[in-house]
Amino acid sequence: GVIPRALNDKGYGHDGVDLRVTETMHERKALMAELSDGFIALPGGRLAVVLGDVAGKGVPAALLMAKLSAEARFCLLTQPNAADAVGLLNDQLIRGGIGDRFVTLAVLVLDPSANAVTIVNAGHINPQRYAFATAALTDAVTDAEGGIPLGLVAGFEYAAKVVTLAPGEA
Image (tube, rainbow, N blue to C red; front, side, top):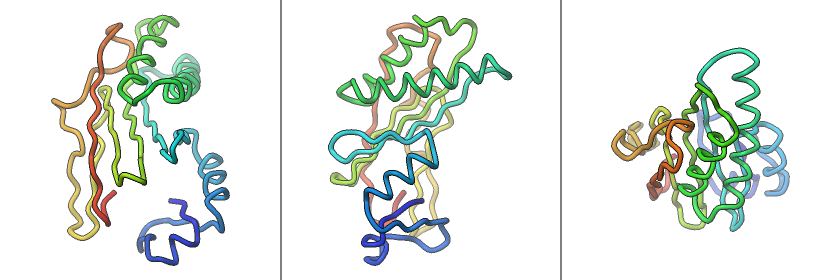
């Protein structure tokens, strides 16, 4: 993880986690952008984390993953909520000629001001919720709450689940 020094000094960092400490929030955002393409800074201080897996191997799958990365960023920045963004992403991939491939995807939008994460699951492995105090790991979204992989059904309506995080949960 990446955390600004001011938050780390207040005890928000956790032992046993690979943690990089920056001097400012601006440095933190820059380092996060450098370390991963799966993080998307959203308006209002929110942060989207996108995890995806493209069916197939080789150059065609790699090209689809590159397209997915750009399209996911566009959809999350232009749609009013995560469920609508994933729905648009699904339709964009189908219109763009995904062929016989599909994509499993999990989108998590972190909202630090609300201590919440909004989760949309499109056929991906269920995101997990971890409580540091009890070391408990549970599904944050159940199979019934998730949707189908991207690229299968145009116009599919994905659902979002909002999970409130208590201190010490991730």
